[in-house]
Amino acid sequence: MPVFTLVAGIVAIALVFDYINGFHDAANSIATVVATRVLTPVQAVVWAAFFNFLAAFVFGTAVAKTMGNGFVNLEVVTPYVILAALGGAISWDLITWWLGLPTSSSHALIGGYAGAAMARAAITRGLGHALEGLIAGQWALTVAFIFLAPLIGLVSAYALMVAVYWLFRKTSPAKMDVYFRRFQLLSAATFSLSHGSNDAQKTMGVITGLLVASHYQKTFDVQLWVIVAAYGAIALGTLSGGWRIVRTMGTRLTRLKPRSGFCAETGAAGAVLLATHLGLPVSTTHAIAGAIAGVGSIHRLKAVRWGIATNIMSGWILTIPMAASIAWVSYWAIHILAGR
Image 1 (cartoon, rainbow, N blue to C red):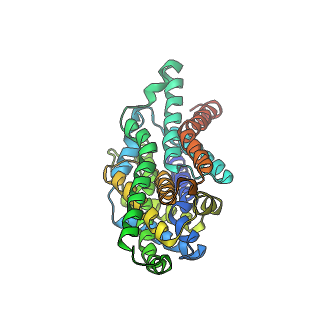
Image 2 (cartoon, rainbow, N blue to C red):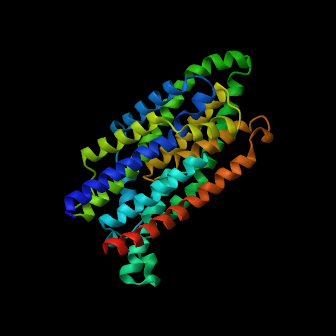
Image 3 (cartoon, helix red, strand yellow):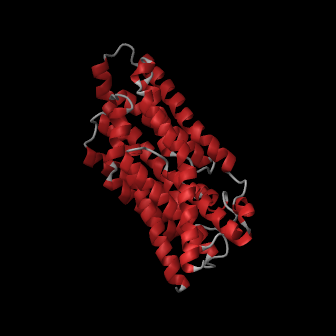
């Protein structure tokens, strides 16, 4: 197969992943604003999609650079490694979407990338050298943020709820919600902006890594067309909505009001924007789930359905190894069938 055709096909698949990322993670951006009935589902996805795309013109490419060369050994990366990585990430995203589990598309992509790189290292250098497909890079912080992102979201949202109740202590809950129905438009926009800023950059990093591995560019610099394409794909995916996961995030985890929805979105956005500033590919799913649990527990711990929260956490822990396993098998299949 001509190199250009192969690279173009893989870029298309990467953008499909980005679309699925937006589709899968639409719940992150719209679940709270839909659950509180501030916006209808259609209004919410349009609002979220717009701000997901707007992030392209606000934030840099630090997360993309981390994604491209902060996890795997670039010496083993080929277009087929990236193809297998995308196969692992897309497969796991679709499985968890079908199950209604709000898992991380980001960690699915990281896991897929790692699994495919290790598979190629095992084939070219021997099974005992599989781990040479990875580098230390950002693994420690990224794995830590599986737990830190929801914790930061939880603590931030809880603290915001305390502040809101103190500031509005002389206002009735009904009147509070009149104000916060408006405020929640801003918080939903901010969270959608943070989602686009972090998640679209992961696909940008993979596409740029592909261009470097295919010798279409010598240095890891993210081109403008890659930025626009990635943000456009994730915005279109968000516009499609992932209603199974919206139900889990917006209604099954805890009951939300406009004031609690505002605090959840704002707290989660703070956690994601912090990670984006640090150049870390973090899970917006983890951040918003932690934030929703934080606002749900403000009155009593039993207000949060911890059984569902435990199931969600199990999905988070499984995401990287499962996506890696699927990508590993995918690369071996490519090697057997295509000799690559």
